[in-house]
Image (tube, rainbow, N blue to C red; front, side, top):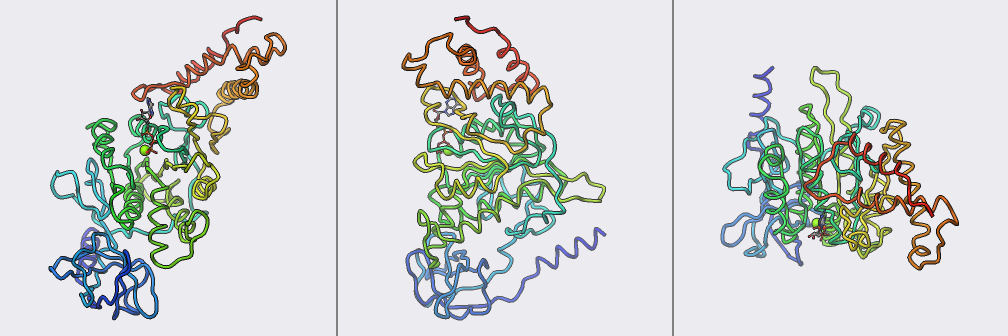
Length: 450
Ligand SMILES: Nc1ncnc2c1ncn2[C@@H]1O[C@H](COP(=O)(O)OP(=O)(O)OP(=O)(O)O)[C@@H](O)[C@H]1O
Ligand SMILES: [Mg+2]
């Protein structure tokens, strides 16, 4: 069996036929190539040779007037009319494996951490794969202890669940994601830092993950300055690594910051390939690519083999432009995922982090993943928050007279204690059982009497 696998791997590595074409035009970021008709299909890779002999990796993104349209993974400096384009059908697969743990790679699977060459897995994996068939997929597993009070109590995360973190810029998405990376239960973590600031990458790896966290993580990075193909492929590679580790029977926590940057990269690619813009200039391919990417996370397929099956639990951040939670990407992502955590700028402004708006956040794992007693405690806390929220303006203006409504009085008494409970430093961790005990105690303390 092993010999057969080695033989298959050797055959996969054999050089295949290469085809050559010529660059005829360049418009913005796209190249038009002649001579590769019926050879390159959309998504295939090739190399453009520059006048200085440099090879630039490109991908076919469309066709126009009998020519193939390419976009590049690198700068097009030195590419001239008449330059050669050579096909490369090995570039569409990578070999992630457990040897990638503790490493930081770019979208092409090259190490960028200066720790030498990567130890690749045995099998080549395509970057694009369909998700497991819906009927063969297991159901969501039990609740995961995330160590984050507001999440464990009100927006619980289950094994195989996909959760979105929705917020405007600077409200604490990346910080919350780093709390998940440090605290949540999982065998391994795959982190995709897609299109975010270069400065934050090092901070995230050194301060947020630390050496222990990094040892059980694979980090895939494409910063905002990289070409759109690199940013899009980083998200695809992140999911490919997660799938590889899942297929080895591991429980993978996949964290992606952010899906919006993936959508923006696809927007640049789609528009350059001539697609028509729709809402907020996003072309239709963005709305086709999003579910294709996000659906790959989730519970693994049922397996009969000796290995226990693995799952991908995923958390995706979504940048909500101008606090508009109905903008097209937020809307599309919300519809695909199994829950969303909404972060609110007003709450962050009051200095309460993580700035989760409990009343607007939903986990589709509820109520099944809590015990009846836990559902009761969380339900009472939510009801108290809703009552306070309804009366917030009246209370602030002094228009509410204590004693008029016992429910509002109770909510006012509990409010400061609930706010203190929801506040959590980014290095604090609390087991879920202790979270519920705290919440139960704070709801049971008799409030101020009018
Ligand atoms: N848990 C926290 N405790 C204290 N401060 C926090 C916390 N979370 C966020 N902040 C503050 O909010 C700032 C922005 O946080 P963060 O970078 O996580 O936001 P973001 O939503 O990822 O922003 P962007 O959309 O720009 O990437 C931080 O620099 C920090 O000052
Ligand atoms: Mg961020």
